[in-house]
Image 1 (tube, one colour):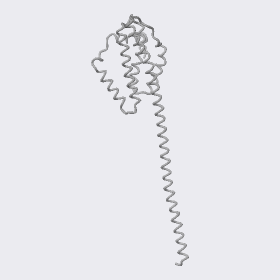
Image 2: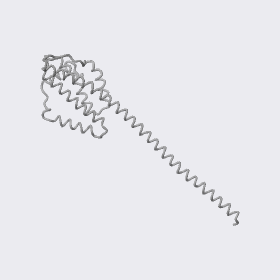
Image 3: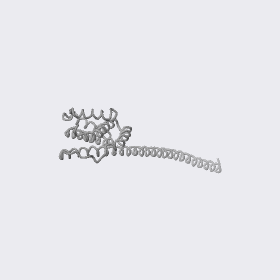
Amino acid sequence: MDNEWIAIIAAAMGAGGAILAQIVSASFSAARDSRRLEWEKETKEEEAKHRQAQRFLDQKRGLYARFLDLTYTIMQEVSSKLKEEGRTKKPAPLKMKVAESLDELNSLRWEIQLISPGEIGAQIELVYTYVPLSGLIYYRPDEFPLEHRESTARKGLREWRDLRLMMRADLSPNLGELEKVIGQIERKKLNPGDQSEPEEHRRIIARIDELFGPGHQ
């Protein structure tokens, strides 16, 4: 083979090698781009899920806070006024109009029922019941003795505090926090001092049903 053919073959082999190198490089580049696009897609999906979860958490936090604020304002004022009545022996009118808050509370409780765990929903129903109950017994001193009205007010505030603990745990990033708090509350309620429900308290609940009907909740 003369030198001319050798030169031609060498040139062809060089060109082929360059083309092969380009093909291999393009293949690696395409794979790299594909992985990058997949990573970007997954990242955007995770960011979207995070934003959605954050919006849901913010909505839940807002509903929880408003329900707690309204119910506490009513029950705390009733409790405070009852203590004042115990000192002065004269009942005083409530600044907070209980009836005016019931519509908003009713709307809040149903919204929360849709997005909260069942345990919180059940506790909300209990706290919600104490709102008209507190207002009713406050304005009926002749029918309900002061000591039993004070006892009912204290029970309502205890249930409110338990609800606050449960809501706070539900908003916690720690997994299992709500179950932990519920367990603590249940153990506390199993204390012998909290087991008995006075007959007078049951009578008051029955009276609520008479005045508002079984569906007042």
